[in-house]
Length: 184
Image 1 (cartoon, one colour):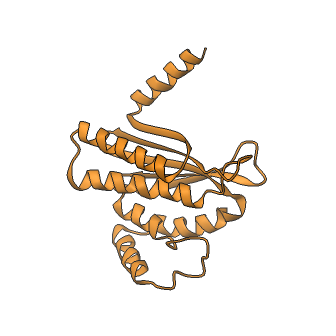
Image 2: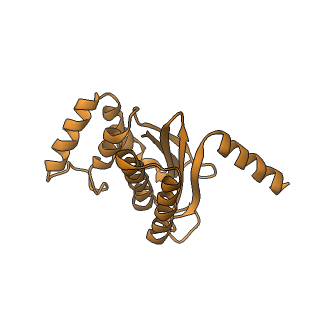
C-alpha cells in the first residue's frame, strides 16, 4: 500500500512541476543541505542569472522564516518543522513554504501581508527601500526584520504573493499552519 501511495505522490509531483520538496525537521544544517541540493537542481536545469538568484534567495527567505518564527512542532522539545516546495510550471518557478504559527499571531501576519497585496510593484519597491532605512521597525518585537522579508518576496515575485492560514489539524486551539507562495 505505501508503495502505491508513494507512486501517486511522485506522479502528482512530476505532473505539477515539482523540482524540490522537503518536509520535516528544520535546522541550519538541514537548510544548508537543502540549499546545496536546490543549487544543483537549478544548475542541472541550466537556470542561470538573476532568475536563479531570485529563486534561491526566495527559497532561503521562506525557509529561514519557517525556522525563526515557528513555535516548534507540537509535542516536541521545541523542534522546528516546516515544508517547502519549489516547482516550475510554464517557465515560472513557484516556491511554497508551510510552517506552524501560534494562533495569537494570525492577525499580526495578516496585517503585514494584506497591505502588500494591495500595492503596485512600484509601491512595493518604495516600501522596501523605506523599510530598509527604518531603524525603528515599528512596535513589532517578534519580527526580526519587521516585515522586510514579505516585502522582499513581493518585490522579487512576478505575481502577487499568496498566503493562507489554516487550523493545524489536532491543534486547532493553539496552532495554525501558515502557507506562503511566491512566483519567480
